[in-house]
Image 1: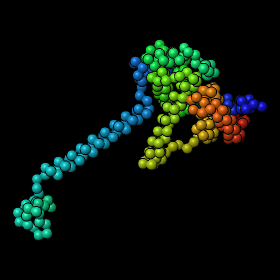
Image 2 (image 1 turned 180 degrees about the vertical axis):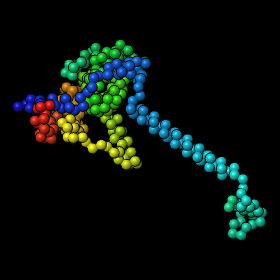
Image 3 (image 1 turned 30 degrees about the vertical axis):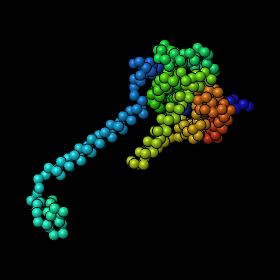
Image 4 (image 1 turned 45 degrees about the horizontal axis):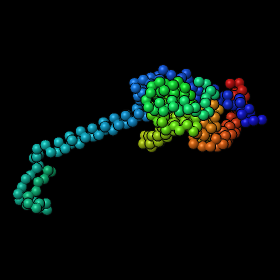
Length: 105
Length: 189
């Protein structure tokens, strides 16, 4: 018996039960392919994923940048605290080249 | 167009049609869409089992065909050439998706997927088909489910028609073995 004939029942079942396509969404596909001067009307799944990933990365960069910026601002704009000392006399063990040290502690 | 009504070799008019579509002529693009849109949709749905993907990739396949229609040299069939665009697109996208899923699993941990439902007939058949290698599965889907010829399959997958026949024979043998216990249910289904 030919392979085709031997498998008829099985092939019929496969046709019926393996990803049987639903009705063809002709109008929707037509609009995407032939509408709007041939441009895709809908974004594909992969395009949507890429856009979401890029958006998430941009947000992460933005908020990361804001956090770093704030930390830098705090560090540079805070007035010297009481413990800050400016001295033109060398401090033992911490002398600078100019002969004075600035300590923020 | 039914799955079995298709041209084996393109006439000069079909090659000219592809050239006109590539040049942006809307009536030529519409003619290709009317003749082949549904079979591309069916093939992609059979491959993915996913409505949105099949929908998006059918559009992408046709747009790609319109933009590269001038590359078709008329050696094989238009149907096989379109199937090649669709299959390559689906394979690339599915590969990327698998990579992303692996990456997610590594960083977030495996996604909790529901356990398979009762061993319903449909699940058993799906399991059996998905147990085949990708090459065998594609041949079964294209030949047995969607009526492509071995010549068209060869063109779409870049293999000889003889290899397509051999793959199909091995795939059927495997399916027959895996589904042996379901013979009665298959007959009643």
